[in-house]
Length: 97
Image (cartoon, rainbow, N blue to C red; front, side, top):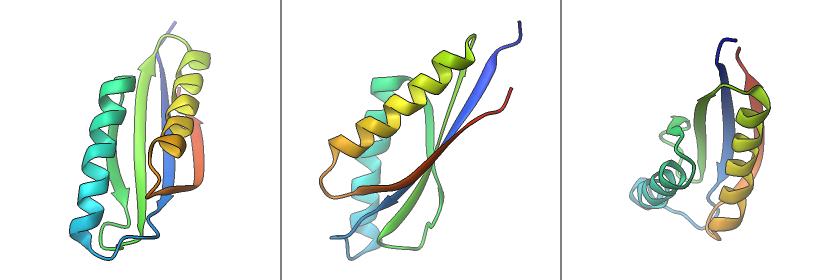
C-alpha cells in the first residue's frame, strides 16, 4: 500500500500585530512548536507581506490516511489553543494520495 500524503492549509489572523517583525516573532515560535510537537513539515505559504494575516501549510506522510488526517486535525486544534495573539480563521485538510 502506498503512503498517504496529507496537507493542512491553516489561515490565521493576528489582530494585535502591527509590524512584519512582530509577525515573524509570532510565527517563528509557532512553527518551531508545531514541528517539535507533531513531527510535520510546516511553512508560511501565503500573505508574507500582510502584518495581520498568515497562511501556513502543514504536510505529513503516513502509512494510514486516517492517521494523517487525524494528525493534521490535531495540529489545527492545537494552534487554535496555544496562542492568544493569533486566531484560526479557517483551515482545510486535503489527502493527496
